[in-house]
Every structure is written in C-alpha cells, then in structure tokens.
Length: 159
Image (cartoon, rainbow, N blue to C red):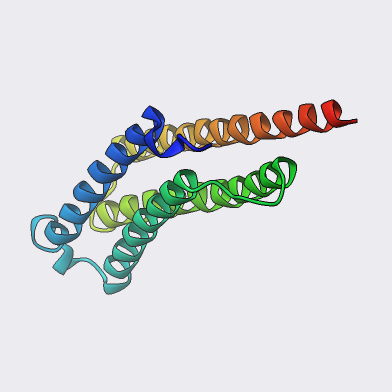
C-alpha cells in the first residue's frame, strides 16, 4: 500500500481520467453551438451539462479513493472499509454512466424525426450501452470480490 501512488495501474487511470475530462469539457464548450444546443429544450441542455459534470466528478472521486486507500487500525478493518467504499463507488459510477449516456442519447435524439431504420439504430445503441454497463458491473464485482476474498483469507489465517 505504501507504493500505491506510483503503481502503473494508477497511472493508467490518471491518463484515462485526464483524457475523458478534456474531451467532455470540450463537449461542454462546443455542444451549444456545434450540436445545435440552442434549438434543444432547456431541460435537455441542463440534463446534459449536469450529467457530464456528475460523470467527471465521479471519475475524479474514484481516482482519489483509489489513490488513497482507506486506512484503519488494522488490515482487516482497512480491507472491510475498502470493500464498503468500492461498493458505494461502483453503484455511483454505474448510475452516473447510465445518466450521462441517457442524457447524451436524449440530447441527440430529441430533434430527430424517427423512421423505422432510426429506431433500429437507436435500439442497437441502447443494446450496446446496456452491454457496456453490464460488463462494467462485472468488472466492479470482480474487484470487490477480490478484496472480499483477501479479507476471508486473512480472517482464516488469524483464526
């Protein structure tokens, strides 16, 4: 845990965070003019801005929680706290991703005149996003289960 700040995985998370933050911030500055945000309903614009800010905030929060693991009086309590933090973060992460994706789809779909082909394309996008959320859930579950396994092995070793 003492070398966690220099871990290569943490570096990759930081790079991903910076790229996403720059891309989404650029989208925030350009969406109103470049994507006809002025012609969209105000609640769609507000939802899009809020969802992007929530998504970026969640990523920054996740990075700092990963960078600074929970410390407690003993390793068992520390791992238990980390499991709790990861569970909360996973729920918030998946919900913010769903909210961001939904508002992005809503933003681009609100002014489209739908035909049967466009409905099929929209359904395909929704299916792809749903699959992405499922795999994200599985990845979070694997991380949490890893810590739970560590904790159960630690408790067995002590007993």
